[in-house]
Amino acid sequence: MMPSVSIRSSRLRLMAAAVGPGLVVMLADTEAGSVITAAQSGAQWGYRLLLLQFLIIPLLYTTQELSIRLGLGTGKGFGELVRQRFGRGIALLSLATLVLSCFGALVTELSGLAGVGQLFGVPLWETIGVLVVLIFAMVCSGSYHGVERVAICLGLFGVAFIAVAWNAHPDPRQIAAQWYQMPLHDSSYLYLVAANLGTSVMPWTVFYQQSALIDKGLGARHLKAARIETLLGATLCQILTAAVVIAAAACFNRSDASFTLTNVPQLADAFTASLGQTVGRVVFAMGLAGGALVATIVVCLTVAWGVGEATGRRHSLEQHPTEAPWFYAAFAAMLLGAGALVGSGVNLVELSIFTGVVNALLLPAVLGLLYWLARTQLTGAFRLQGGYARVVGVVFGLASLTGLFCGVGGLWN
Image 1 (tube, rainbow, N blue to C red):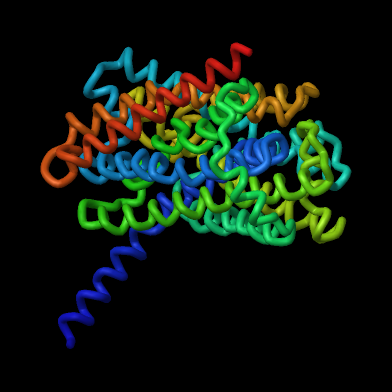
Image 2: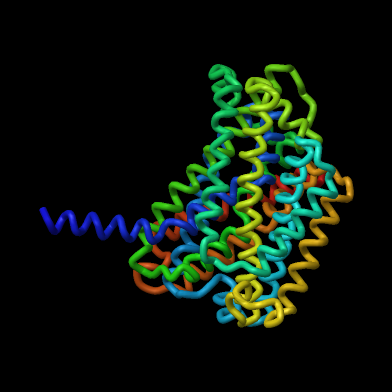
């Protein structure tokens, strides 16, 4: 009895030690852009994009599982591996893709948080100004210590969307009728398919999890626990996103509204019809702001790690601003640019969805590079090989082709 108890205790300790990076990145994946895109999907197409949310789970898991293999198998971040394998030029090109993705993420998070401010009558520029100052202050004083707990607590606010979907009272018959309907001939439908893909699998999620595993000091013995955590996180992420689709479809279809969303308060009004004005807005604000805040934390850390790895200076975030002025100046410029774009009066819903479409168009480069590294830079049990490698290749190929086809088709028309 004692050996079995000791084994179970050891497994629990490994699981507890590994919990953090996978759950944080999956909660960050349920960010403002994902919520806005899912809400638009339900508002325009009812339940016709609901099946897609569950089809994304295998793609999301296999992507992040490869980042786990690379992180634990090499002890190096994604940017560092690219630099050592392909040279400084390709590393900087990969970094440019990362920065573009992170800039888009910052724009969508600021958009979502600004929309939450609008719910409670706070002017757009005031919200943006406060957020820019707070985010930059966090980056200047931040490290990985303690970030996980804060991020997980904030991210779990997204569970509020399940309550919103439940109170929307969706019609099971309508869900069944629309479940398999996929009007691929319609460019607006293709556009939202691409946006849903691009707000689920993003370059910064790959960079973050791999670097977070290393920064936390995890090793090969944590591989199984990290995989389990990531699978559970990916499933939770897509359940929350599906809940947003269901809530939007039920609310808009019930009121026979066929219009598209133009702002976050409009979205909140539709979602809170069954919860009451005060309670509904608070619940919705918690769900949207929680995901946006945890994604902001993750994006800030990702930029720091990515810039450091690609340039050979790891963990830039832990350096004082006087020790790495080049990094902090670049990040401040990106943050100010994102704030200015959000505060310019551009349609925040359209901007968030467009960012997702851009990420979908980047999928072939991101997934292709990830797959190549997992096939060539790992050895032993960590190496991607055999039947699983072929399965991952098929999943990545289908996702890349879908992202390109739907993204180009949606933008073209």
